[in-house]
Length: 106
Image 1: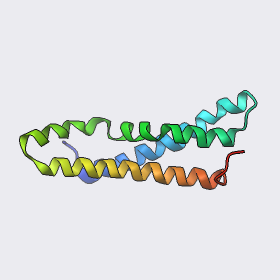
Image 2 (image 1 turned 120 degrees about the horizontal axis):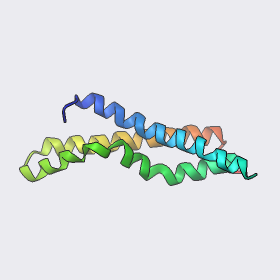
Image 3 (image 1 turned 60 degrees about the horizontal axis):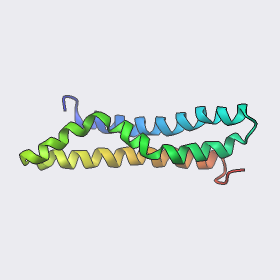
């Protein structure tokens, strides 16, 4: 990886956070236009975006996995930390959306 690890770590967190928060709020506009409850759609969309947010956040970092075959375990450890960072961004966004919708869909 050309960039510093801390920069990539923070970027993974906020990319996953943004995918969940932005995708679910923007996606709920479609429910509003067809006359359904947008708050219920926010949680439904956010739950379905979780794995895609993690995949989007760590998308370009899978090149480090070929380092495992070369015997460098530091790249493996960094990859695990990036996945944990993306999972943290998803969890934070889900918590904010649950607060916003009061945890129960209408």
